Structure formats: structure tokens, C-alpha cells
Image (cartoon, rainbow, N blue to C red; front, side, top):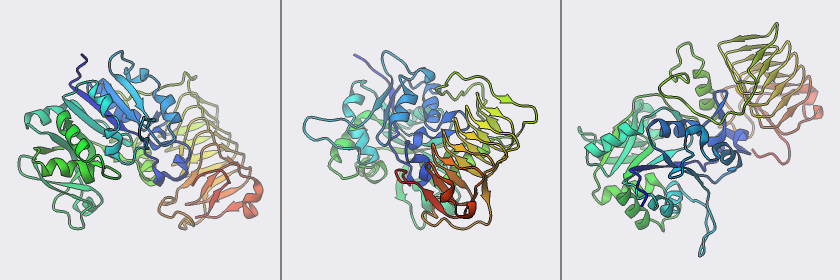
Length: 424
């Protein structure tokens, strides 16, 4: 019989709608990050670095790129005969088939998968955070305290606490109460959405609450464990942790990688971040090309100038083009004589010669001001920006656009240009 002490369940089904056009064709955990990675590489690498070698990845929304990226788990050394990584989409069952309707419902629908490993502990992770964490240390804390459910928490400034699920603990870090996004928080320990459960406790809670619509950890499973007297503890984490749920936090987390002393270091020898790597030639900087304080992925060719930016793999930046404070994802081609300021350009886009992105005043976006903000210009995947046009701040473009889509050659700040067939 197979026995695993702890297995991980990684929730990677989310659409990530606050990332706008970046997630119209791809699940949020599969979005590029830091030049050569995808967001899901971080929790997966944490698993293998923590000695957790059995990971179920629960996918749902636009899973194709995520499935191809994970494959059989070779880059993370998760191609095991027993355990390893398994992609778990919702599947047809004999009596009733349903999509995953909540975080805990997705776990509930995979009880058989977890049961097959007879685990003592189950680690629940989210697929869309950037951080490094040793789950073994958290498991040790869980065991020492005789906990049945341990929730990783992070101290946040009191004024921000109302945005999170907040844990209230005694001096031994035992959870005595918790509040979901409280108006007047009684503590600043925010839940990170990382849980370790005793398998028996989790199974009982999932079965007891199975009929709840949109079965959720924060709303149903954790309250159930608490009400039934299960010992619950808060494990305090003080490292770097970033939820890249909005375009601005995504842009910021990428920019933090190129700080003079980055708070989050991709280059640590003892805690490597693994990813599926296409075999590409090295990057090339042409005579007259210039790179300053930037990350540039392999296979990229730089003929222009790049300052404080994160450039993916296989990107071409033309002569006379100046890129500043921008994120340019894999296989995008930028022509000659362009000016790119504070832009996020998704994969496989084409920006033709003489284009200016990020010019003009800052005006709120006309369709989704809560998504396209902070002066960023966002260009969707496989979009084409015709030669010589200018695009303002807080603007978004997606699709194969033509010169006539730009009145007088200018898409004003705050405007939305999404061609038919493209999602918002």
C-alpha cells in the first residue's frame, strides 16, 4: 500500500479576472512572471524544495497552457512512479457532473485521489502567489502543537487587515476566532490561503459540508473544524509573499525583482525556482543595444535600449526603440523606433515600427477603471499594434488592430480597444 506522510493540493483553476486581458486566454497561474517563469512555478518549486513529492494540481479555467507547462512534472523533479504531479481537471462522473464551484469543492471532488496515498496530512496551496516557503517547517509546527488545522498567516499593517481573512490567536498561536474581511479587525494576522490539515479532519469536514453551494475553506471548512473543537493554530510567516491578483501588484512584483537588492531573489543557490524551459539560444545584445537593471530571458535579441524592465524569452526589441519600466512577455516582437513606457505586453504580441505606448495624461479607464489603473498600458496576447500609432496611459488593447482603430493615430488615455472575439 502506498503511504505518503503529506501530499499537496494546489488550487490552480482561477481565472484571475482582475488581470484583465492577461487572463482572457490563460489561467492566472500560467501567466508569465520574472522573464522566464510562470506564476505556478513558485508553489511547485516550494513543494519540491520542501520535500513534498506528491502534488495534485486542480485546474479548470483555460487549462491548456497550464497542462502543457506542467506536463509530467520533469522540471520540478515531480515525474515519479509513485506520487509526482497529477493534473486534476473536473471530470465526468456517473451520477452528476459538475464544475469546481469553490476552493473546498474542488478538493472534495478529489477525495479519491487523496485517499489513494493514505496521507496523514494534506497541504492546501493556492497557485497564484509569489513566495518561497519551507512547508516542512510549517508541518513541524503543526505536529508539535498537536494541531488538526494549521493556517499560515502573515502580519499585515492594521489598516490593511480589513482586506483579508484575519486570525485571532492566544499567546501560544492557537486560533481562538477568525473574521473574514472585518470592518474593525481585532488582529493583524492575515490568512495566506496555505493550510495543513490532518487528513482525517479535512475529510470529515468536506463530507459534512459537501452540500454547501460554492464550498469554500474560509467560509465553510475552517468554521466547521473550529465549531467541532479541532485544535487550530496559526503559523506565522515573515518572508516575502505577494498576491499578484491585480495588474498593478503583478507589475510591482516583477519590478521588485530588479531592485538593487531584490527582496525576492531568484538567484539563491539553496532554494531554486524550477520551470519548464524551452531550449533557446542565449540572449543577444547588438552593437548600440543597451540594457540597464533589467532581466532578459534567453533567446531575446536587443537592438534598442532597455531600462528597468523584465523581458521574457524570445523577445525582439528593434533599433532605436526605448523600453522603460515595462514587462514584455515571451515571443513578442517590438519594431524599430518605438517608445514603450510602463507597459505590460502579453505573449506573442507584435508592436510595429514607431509605436508609442504610455504617452499623455493619466485618465481613468472607461470600461474597467478598477483593473486598468496606475498609469499602466496593457496589451493582450497575440495583439498587433500598427505602425506609428500612440496609446495613452490606463489604456488597454487586445486583438489584431488596424490603423483606423486609432483616431488621428492616437488611442487616448483610459480608452479600451478590444476587438471582437477577444475577452475583456
